[in-house]
Every structure is written in C-alpha cells, then in structure tokens.
Length: 377
Image (cartoon, rainbow, N blue to C red):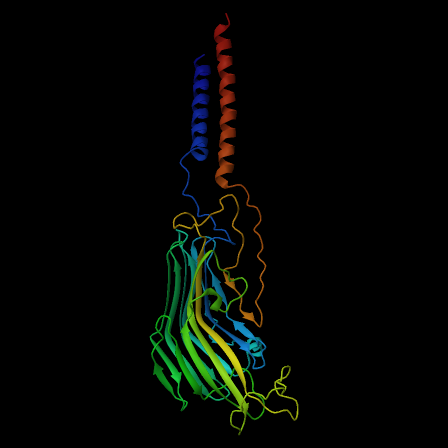
C-alpha cells in the first residue's frame, strides 16, 4: 500500500506543477503592450520632401511638367523614415529632365530629410540640405541656400510648430554674380527682378529672356508641391522654402513688345507663333519648393493617446517612402498583410494545460485504485 500512496502523491505533485506552469504562461503578468498602429487615413502623420519643381505656366496659359523627389511618410507605429543618399540633384534622371526641361539643375548636398512618429503619437517632419540652382543654358548660378532647414511638429490639435531657416542665401545679380541676400522674415519675401537667366524649358530660336525671383516661406499646405499620397488632416501645419521664377521671353534683338493689339491672335498651341504673326512677349512661370514638410493630426488628438489606434486591426502595409513623381503624381498600391499565426506563448500554454489535465486524470485513477485496495478484506 505504501507504494500506491507514494505513486498517488507523486502524480498529484506533478499535476500541480504542470498546472501552475501553464497558469504562469496564460494567466501570468502580461508582457509590455506593443505599440498599436495609427489609422493610415485619418491618424497622425508627417511628410518630408527634399525638393520639387513645377512649370506652372509654359507661357501660353498651360501647365508644364513637374518633378517631385522622393517623399518620406511617417510610419504607422513609432519610428522615422529617412531619405536615401542616392538623391543628389533635381533632375536626377533622363525621365526627370524630359519632364521639367533640360536647362535647370538643382544640386542637393548634405541632406537629412525624415518624417517620424513619436511613441506618444506626435508626428514630426524635418528637412536639412544645401541647395544650388544652376541655369545650364546660360551657365549662371541662380541661387544658393546654405544649411537650409525646415520643420513641422504637431504636438497636439491646438499646438503646431513650424520653422524655416538658412545660414546663408545668395542670389545672382544683374551682372551675373552671386551676392548675399537677407532671408525673408515671417510673412515677408525677397524679390529681385530682371536677372540674366532663363527658364528650365528650352526657348525658341533667337529668343532671349530675363527672370524675376521671389522667395518666401511656405505658409499653407496647398503651397507645397506633392504627390496625391501626401495628405493633410483635420489639423495641418506646413513649412518649406517657396521660390517662384517668372521668365519673360522676347524675340532676340528686339525690345520687349507691348501686349497684342485688340483682335490680334495670341499663340496657344505651339512654342512659336504661326509664320507672319506678330511676336508678343510671354512669361514662363516656374515654382520650386525646397524642404517641403508637413504634419497632421485629428481634431481631437492628444499626445499619449495612441493617436487613434486601431487595436483590433493588423497594421496595413503602407510604404514610408513615396517614389519620385515625374510629370504627374505617382500612384502606389499598398498590399495588405496576411493574417498572423498563433503566438508561440499561446501554443505552449495550451500544450501545458493539456498535459496538466492528463496527469491530473491519472492521479484520480490511482487514488481510486488506492481506496479500492484499502477496502478489500
């Protein structure tokens, strides 16, 4: 009988140990909660772009081409997306040159461009770089901006911070030489006219040009040059350096002509007027944005609240880098992640519980046999 009792006690102890182990896996203190993804369509988000250029008017009232460099989007969980080192100029490929014209080159050096989401859900975007704009057709350096920096931070729905600065700004003067220019203050702008350079697009044979330049800070989200995937929110802040160039084109060797006489046709569908038609001056309008950034949050957003997390849904696979856009916005289809399998801790918990149940049943059987042995004469 002692052997039977000993066996019962051993089985009972083993059952208790296994049951306790299973309880520690399933019912023990929970692990630290993983950050939940913010909503991809309405949650906090930040965007950052190193540079973009668009011919907004080709001189005949029509929009021209555009190039938008790679854009960083903040991840859906805490982290930062940064621009890769391959972007060193705009345009940077034959396709980009075909879109914006062959005459402008914007050199980009020492860039540090990123968009991030803090653990508290606060979105932030920053862009830093050195810029040099060159008119290749006239071999003129139009402007330089040394250590340009822009930022946008949305700490709450009622508090947003933006900034745009540079260590030094230089513009070409009437003699074709660079000279330092004071940065525009908040709400102000730098305006310089009749400068000796042309447009990014090719001009007609024998045409001459001078350009006017305006430089100011980006003040509104709709002033940014961006792809369709770059969205705003219920509360949005934006920053960047906005450069507008008006290039006045005229026939070579002639003074600028007055506007066309009443009833006189104006060319609309070609880069040069029909043969025999009086040449009229035209203005090509070009826009650049350097260091475009923005941040957006929902109207009821508060830091630390998870940024409207969706705990029941898996994080969608949304790219944090939007590819460069040439001529038109670039579309990108996000692929949804597949359903995840069971967690390893859950599998072990079920297995241990099952083992405990088996050993517990064995203990009961042995106990019944023990009582049966004691009751026999």
